[in-house]
Length: 236
Image (cartoon, rainbow, N blue to C red; front, side, top):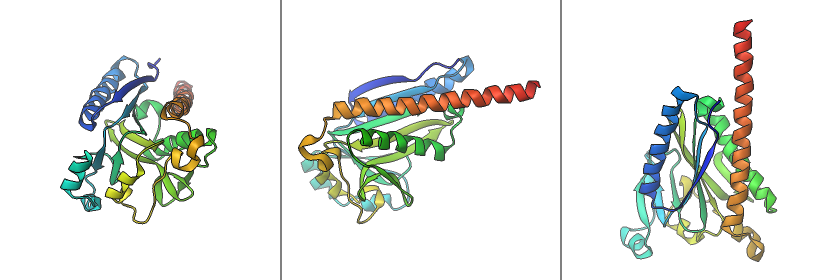
């Protein structure tokens, strides 16, 4: 029986340090395959202001601010090996890095991304926000504005990176970039949508973790049924 999902709150952590922690946890999940497996981890974190730029061709051109302006605002810039383009992380934003054994969960990359999106849509719905998918762009959207960005990488079929949900993020910082490389597409937050009625990050994080955990556990149970059925067919 594989070890269950473990949730780790890293608090406020610089992007580089969080990336190193992801790498350590990926190696743990890979190593556990020889001992029954490990579903993985949900790493919860908040980053000091940072812009992350992927290695996708042209992503760097979507950084609009000068080094001097970024320095005046205390915003770092980091290259990242996740998918996607360019995005901003900062206070008031919930970042979750699922480090999951996708082999054990029997999830393809498309299914995995849709699972993450659904967990965010379910969370938004609890607070009276209608989150939607866009068939032309990954993410969760509210009335045409992106409320949650996604960017992932798979290493040895273990997931890295993840999602960033804007709760009470300083949205003006997104004006320093072309968010996700999508021209003319605005960004929003829970606070921008709900105003004074908006819940704080802690309340949103609690429900987001609950929905993510529920979807991951459902995937684990489906995978176990599928493996049992395959063993039965092989033995029969």
